[in-house]
Image (cartoon, rainbow, N blue to C red; front, side, top):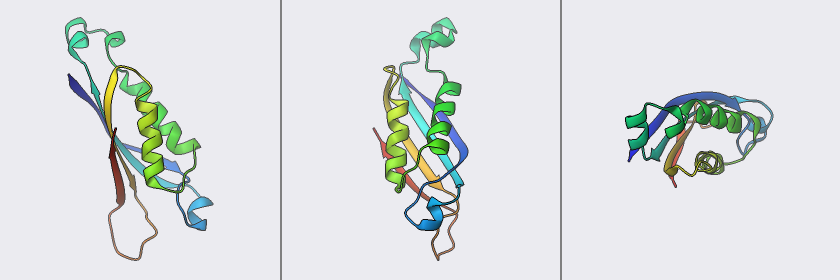
Length: 116
């Protein structure tokens, strides 16, 4: 077994509870870690024997950009669902960061991490 990691994928999306969050895109950052059997690909050097991280990154970006959710928890769950659609992915961890959260405190970001 092994892990395929996509870190720091950034995309604009419309997600949030507040009215201003639902009316304009804001930046999100996503990390995904896929648990995959990498043994065959390690032997064959063939993309067909592994999960194509470029395709996963495109699918994750599309979820952030084109779907709308109020909660980061739902957005992270939806991303996990997309990642798990490939049967070779046996588990996934997803971290979603809202880079400009509407909070009064000075924070770098807020985030949700889920494991499926």
